[in-house]
Image (tube, rainbow, N blue to C red; front, side, top):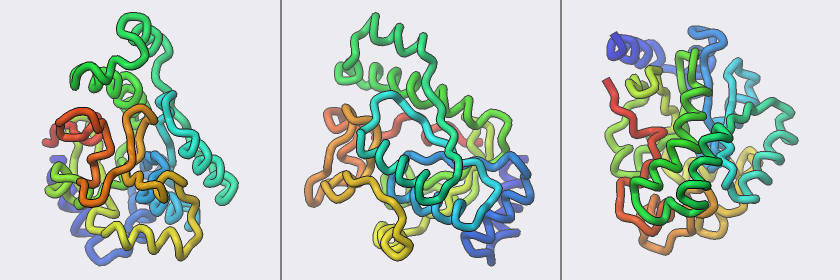
Length: 236
């Protein structure tokens, strides 16, 4: 059934602009369309489309407790520019307390398993809470961001979170993203000018060097698929 729904959505919106598709989803699933932002460049493009066009789509973010100050700064500037609400989800305090008490504050450096445990507590569990009861999850994923994202579809069913996922910027280039932000004076994270392409938690993100993969700055000390579990769920 999930495949049928996503194919139907793709067919219905094939001639729509990005904004028309967002508006269609908001009307088709009233009160059940949600967008997750981490205030990166792609997410700021989608936020601009949603807020500028006053679309009935809930915008939310995950505050892991270990974000860069620059991320909070762009969060604040976004609120001031659009005068719209952004919901915030935090990890469960007891889970974070237990993690730090048993493994210390930097256990994620010790192994991939420990890092995934931290991501699960700080990101996946709050995300599951945010997505609960909703029908469509909008993301800022782009195909060229990593090998894992090359095979994504515009619409797909995320079996891990049991929700339809819409990736409106899937085929956009980084240049197109940057041009939109510049043209419409959309607030940006200051770290982008310092070589940060993908921005997550402060201890786990660094700037990338010329010629490095776009995801090289994430969990830079390990060799892995560079995903935290938010977009790595098995699809039906």
